Every structure is written in structure tokens, then in C-alpha cells.
Length: 118
Image (cartoon, rainbow, N blue to C red; front, side):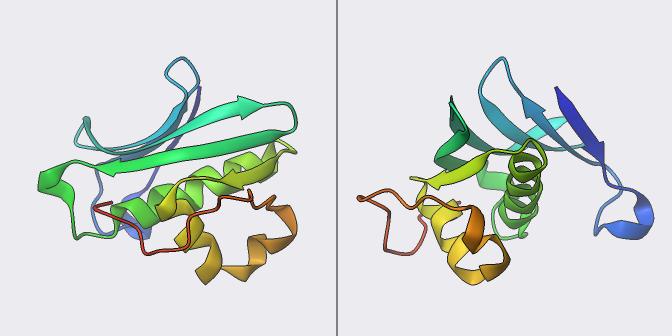
């Protein structure tokens, strides 16, 4: 499990934890120990295939899903794998952050709309 805690000086709240939960195949952002955002993935040979991102109702509108997306995508690249964005939120994030473009394998059925309730 990869884990990163954001310090007081780097974040909008001091009690945010980011981690990769290999057992459940998801990246997680916790606030005060409570799961606030998760992005589920499939681990494929040479790739991480992002499936769906969920934000708990009480944490919506804070930009936490973007924080988790950045952490998860950077973690994938650090592992030497490529990104497959089936998740609408991750796909939208990638379209707004062209620095990842060389590391994406867009699926033929890539989401084209705006993300839902992440």
C-alpha cells in the first residue's frame, strides 16, 4: 500500500491522507480517517485501467477528487505503467492536464462527457 499524508503547509486541511489500496483495487483520499473519495481501477499488464471515481456526499464540492486524481496518476507513472481512462472523471482530468498525454492509452469507448457526481 502506498500512502502519503499532506502536511499543514501543503493543503487546505491538515488531516488528509492519500493512499493506494491494492487489496481493494482503489486509490483513496481520507479526511480525518473517513473515506471521502475513491477511484477504482483494474491492474492490467503494463497499465492501470481507471473505472470509476466516487466522492462521499458530505465531501463533494471541495476539489478532493482532483487531489486524488493527481496522486493516483502520478503513482501509476512512478510504477512505470500507462493509464487507461474508462472513468469519466479521470478522463476529464486528463484532458485538462496535457502533461500526462504521452502516458495515456485512450480506449475506443473513452468517456467524452463531463464527469458525473465526483
